[in-house]
Image (cartoon, rainbow, N blue to C red):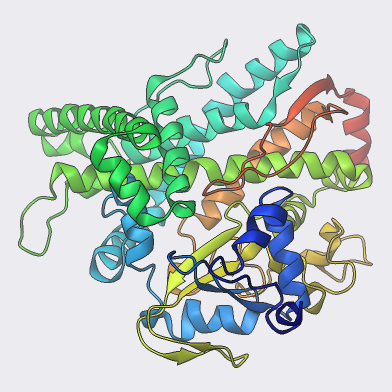
Length: 474
């Protein structure tokens, strides 16, 4: 108990703080538990793991520390070897996983591409088609048959089709009527789920299981093989296409795969198929779970706050989505490693090799950052001059609102994500009232991104045209 006062959590012999993590953290809602501990410790605490484990780390949600590690001292806080080892089988040397040159090169190329007019047109067109030709028909059918749907599942299908079009120029068709099970999508999901388990398993254990091809690791291997097969097929077909076509026709395609295929590495050679596969898989991971998960929490928060729904119909969509991400960031915690001794602005000392976890979820619940009402869903806090009817949206510093990360690794797709989420949310809200089922338990699942553990079970009601009209007349 004396240690609890000193360290924020009781420290057991041999086991360290693990018992608290297992018996309180994992049994309830891990992210809430971390937020409580951080609140008690003024935003930073040291987690002491068992003697034999790699669980020792510093957990922080102090904006000063975040700016320090994401920007000021960016070079000495890479993702690190531990993170890369755990994710390498799935992500290879893709942008999510990479540090230094490998990361820099991909970042630069993708960044130029994301800002090109051609890319913008392609994303706008593909999204328009997905919403009008797929999403709305699926929702309309559920209304006609008064069926209950899992909105999270439907949104995941939408973002999966969308991101495959952007990364590969291929449409897997997950969001077709009847919601078919697509083998590639399933394999991708299984692979991310199995990979997450490595973070809570001692390294020697999962490496042994991988070597012996047992249990979860066996499943992971199978899923990754399916993902690879899909990627290799696409890459092969695209190479044939590019090889056959002359330059004029080649310019038609503006997906990332085609762009990276046209480039040379530092030796002046084309990128290997393996590297192209890594790039595409990383972009699917980056673009699929994040916005769909954000939209799911957003619709759940709307259900809890009906007065906000009224305001959205009067146009404060961006503020409401940012507010939703503040409380339920799609990536709830992220991870770095420090490569030389350093000290955080709040005085925490960091020895070389220390793992640092920054708790993005907890930041939204810090009174010191957002004030006493930090747990309330209040989109107005994003509007400057919100007492006046027409407040202007004001973005917040990336080191307080870290849903999109910050510094040199700030999310590349941030503008695209807002565009996609606003478009999807507005298309749905404009036509339907989303009613969340009363007894649907809402809890986050432990994964790389913050899925709703049991999905979001909803029924839709058509909105009356007159109801919409009144918002556009005044």
